[in-house]
Image (cartoon, rainbow over all chains, first blue to last red; front, side, top):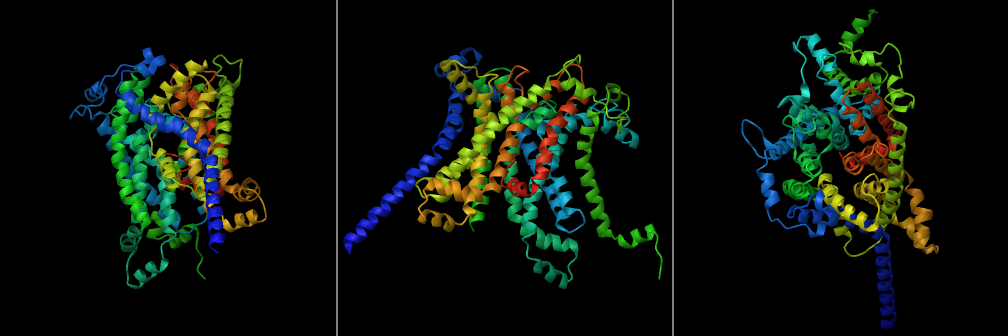
Length: 315
Length: 297
């Protein structure tokens, strides 16, 4: 009996070992690629941020001279980075304002869109598909269409419409005005990414127990009261999750602002600054240092995400 | 019986709630569709229409001026856009194939097999998803320049290098989405196959994959879209206009000293239409993937 059990155990163990070997064999190619083009570069980028790396020594990166915190000091004292009240917010503050405002607006627009699509009407399927267009279409095309709509010449559509309505007297250069440019990239963010929030909210809305609403109706609640006392509490977690996820993605965003304003006129965010240091000035050390500052702020967001969202998901 | 005309019908149908609902819906639809209309219609305008004092809301006829500039070699400012479309396909198709194959193997292992460090592996791959692309581009550029120097190939203007770097962006998504899908396929089906004497690979090939076709299609489309739309890495790694993918070419035309918005819009239309059509045709499979982060936005 004991002999049988031990053979079975041994066989089970060897099966497990075999399974584990197979698993590693299957996952090895992905793991190797992910390690060599994500994890190693990420660590290497910390190294770069403490060294003087430029085009001149790119062929011999690993012997680049160590410069300590110099790259970081250069970034902190850079005009584009520094917060100077009254003149410029600097990249770090602009980034934070842009991501928070953009994310909140995305959530609000996504919530409205989800509520619209949550009630049955003719052509709802098609409408939902159309609502996803901004999210699915290539960012390059979308950004340039908006630039063309906001064209500063009087022949620009936005100028033409607003001038005909009497809102403005003279054509405006929307994307090259401090303040307005930042507001517009935030609106663009909401325009483009609300469908993501909408889909997540819609999925959650359809899972809300309808008896809750029926009970509220019996108690004489109006639409607004039902919204505040049932819908919003039911959506709390999903709204929190979308908020943090979008916040992190927006914070990392490079394409949108680079294409819309090139990072000018008070819209220079950290990713754009990183790009400029690295691929305009070809000072990779300084670029890496900027990316590290970006990462440090991002880690705070990630910590919140793990602490709040993942814990709630487990409950 | 009371007879009602159109206004009467409208008045009795309309109440405050319906009114706000319709108004908001119209606002959304206009806001979304107008830019797309503007893109397509601008692409069919002539140079005179595009540069006039007033915007032309409806082009007088479908003029192909812009498209000729993109494709007609005899045009004075010929852009050779066909080459750029080809380049985009040459990058997007291999990226999709490699990412899907590798992700199927990896996702299967994570979803089905027991091994140590599984959760840690999955979580670390997910973390990549939150990683900024600008952070990785610097070390990647420096590393690949070094490797290329040793092995004697070019980092810049090399589509293979671009495909390699795109795997960093597509593999995590593909792996995550496929793992979730494999977990929904009941284990019993595979167990039955194993008991019948199939090997693991036969089980994957004959049972799991056919069941996972919808997921494979949607993951394939997503990775294709990521590679098709990618801007930053292509901007850094491509230098000569003949090697540009579409996004970089459009950026170049836009930044040309003589502004030609109709050409930019024509190129944008060409880049957008296939993606939107693909999405509409496959919407049933794709919507779920969007919430799983299929488009990293």
